[in-house]
Amino acid sequence: MVETMKIAIERVKKSRLSEVDFSNIPFGKIYTDHMFMADYRNGEWTNFRIMPYGYMPISPATPALHYGQAIFEGMKAYKGLEGEALVFRPTDNWRRMNISGERICMPPIPEELFMESLAALIDLDRAWIPDTEGASLYIRPFMFSADEYIGIKPSDDFTFMIILCPVGSYYSTPVKVRIETHYTRASQGGTGYAKAGGNYGAAIYPAKLAQAKGYHQLLWTDGKTHEYIEESGTMNVMFVIDDTLVTPALSDSILAGITRDSVLTMARSWGMKVEERKISVKELIEAMEAGRVKEAFGAGTAATIAHLELIGYNGKDYYLPPIESRTFSNNVFAELEGIKRGLKSDPFGWIVKM
Ligand SMILES: *Cc1c(COP(=O)(O)O)cnc(C)c1O
Image (tube, rainbow, N blue to C red; front, side, top):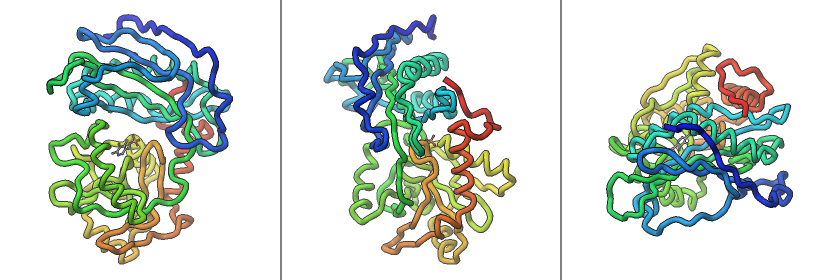
């Protein structure tokens, strides 16, 4: 447990803030002035510190580098009207990080460690939260094994960190995806439900093959039969078929997205018919051919709502209806953005002010 959350703070001598062109922010390349670090030693979290963002020494025998004992989270903060940071559902990210950690044999992070370190870091780098349209502060908590040992076993020592980066919008155009029926992102009994490093490293090659054919991302299918739709890149996927919002039910091979949950919660509160169930590729293709798929989008923190422009399958591209006609996903995007930015009321209590 965390006895007393005393965080040692070493500030930068000179902020890099003035060097950043906020009108043109690339995703994930610019980091704020500071970072948070904590160590797990002898069965407890200790040595809480905030220091200037930068390189850090680690042992070449760090198991995270060899065996992927690493997990991460992703969430966003927006600038409120009074300059406060509005963080979207951070306790859900904390909860999910511990679910991921358990799968990789990592110790849980106490809620107060997660929330207080986040608040302290955001407070220090508050001026970095962009207020331009579509922009926000992306928050990346992560944990890795820090033993100096190249045997494969549960580690004893860990490092928990948080870094921050101002980001613009993720996809600037509607997304082209291809249904993947050969490669597998996650399989039954695997780590797909965990935000664990190895999942993402393994997905780059199949995604690269699709990108060479002009698609942005893959639409993954289940690892066993490749007959059922799972998710896309780092987004859950949703369809409006006729008047029903349909999304694959969660399983151990699908990441339980917080954006996914937010969209479902909102849809239900609007009285929309919602189905969380298996969606076969066959059903989806037939529904697209019959013109019954009115909307299709990815849902994730980085992109919020990413409209799908087309879905490729077996060498054929199935185009989806024009973006302007997609009432539900346009409304849900506007509502979510409004809540996140503090411009609309927050009926579900999703915003934490820091
Ligand atoms: C992070 C992630 C998502 C989206 O989760 P959010 O909590 O909405 O950001 C979906 N799928 C995968 C594989 C992810 O890593």
